[in-house]
Amino acid sequence: MTRHAEGLSAIGRGWLDRRRFLSNAATGLGSIALASLLGRDGLLAAEHPAPVIDPGRPFAPRPPHFPARAKNVLVIFCAGAVSQLETWDYKPELIKYDGQPLPGGPAVTFQGPAGALARPQYEFRPRGQTGKMVSDMLPHLAELTDDIAFIHSLTSKSNTHGPAENFLSTGFVLDGFPSLGSWASYALGSENQDLPAYVAIPDPRGVPQNGSNNWGPGFLPAAFQGTPLSAKDPVRHLAASGVGPEADRAARDLLRRMNQRHLEDHPGDGKLAARIASYELAARMQLSIPRIGDLSTEPAHVLRLYGADDESNPIKAAFARNCILARRLIESGVRFVQLFNGAYASGGELNWDGHSKLREQYDRHAAILDQPAAALIRDLRRRGLLEETLVVWCTEFGRMPMFQKGAQGRDHNPDGFTCWLTGAGVKPGVSHGVTDDLGQRAIQDVHPLYDLNATILHLLGLDHEALTFEHNGVRRRLTNVEGDVITQVLA
Image (cartoon, rainbow, N blue to C red):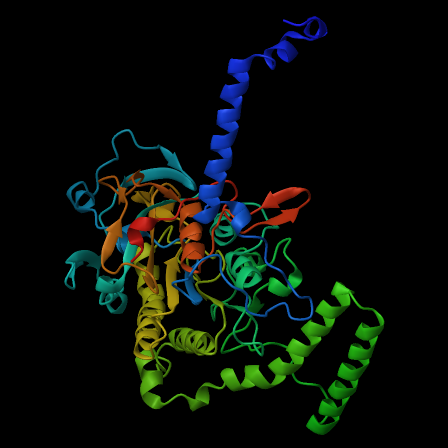
């Protein structure tokens, strides 16, 4: 050791050791090589920089991280928590042990004391070429079984409707986080500059439990929030009140010239550019929304296919018209459409929250959902749109295998339930994930809802780990710090 090294600390003297130097140099070179290989294969988050948003054109199309299988997404969101045991997840053991107590089961569930195990309230039968057992509750959707990828082992972080809706729509149980559709439109923009990039279609009976949180932008720029509209309630305040079309057009032309001059005097003012872009989109929507919402142009056979002409069931007919509107929006290039079936908590009267009279209420709700939703998927396929549209059927959590004590309904169950995918990039006719013999808990290939959202983004060509936005010093993403793509359901 040299005289100059005598004054160094033990750590400092260690760096003068030749063997240690060579070892550290080799590790450093290996790390550089690994980073290079990961970068070449597109596996580093840095390979996917944040979207560059032009405030004057916030919905301009932007490239995905990698080639996308789906250009558009249609989400059919059944609010109120549909029972997996009455629909998609066949459990013959429930029939065997019907009326018996669940051994070692909870004495109390979310809403109160637990009753005995209860068999499925609808008959199940094999469907299509796959022979998958699906119930008679939704006969039209059951006919599509061979085209669907079922995920039977999803879990939620909440057993309460509002927070669970948040978790499904935004990846967080708390309010204030961006919805899935907002992330998609922020990342990709839209192909149609005359319509919103993201549209939410509430149920004819009302909005879901957590309302606009399901389509809100959270901390993303406000431009990326969903626009709520339906066949019954188009966008409000589109038409100028008390002003003729000529005067309205002249006023808009003058306003556009004044805005442009002001923008030229204040270059780089992103907020001003965004405000002008919002006004101009509203002006274009004065023409596009009435045209796309005019269902009188639909032929009679299409109205009949969806059930939009069913005078015996006005709610079904109204939901069917929403389904036709959803198809027209997808057809026009809207990036993300969120179609709600079911409204807010109401003892199961307005949504799928079947606590007390499950069979009676599900008979009504199934009649509203089944034919229109199945017709929507068939119509997308017939028009060649399903090849580039991902369809997601989802609900916020599932139901318990026992009835509630003194009732004929099932309590909330976030520990194992079913959602499904069909369309662009989806492997048809597969069932992935398993719940236990009674359908209470996911036990194989367990997937928190993070994984479902990661898979949806993946099919849009987006890396869920790289799609981020810095908020309050934290780099946030839809899947928080979790999530894996469910590759088993991808074609």
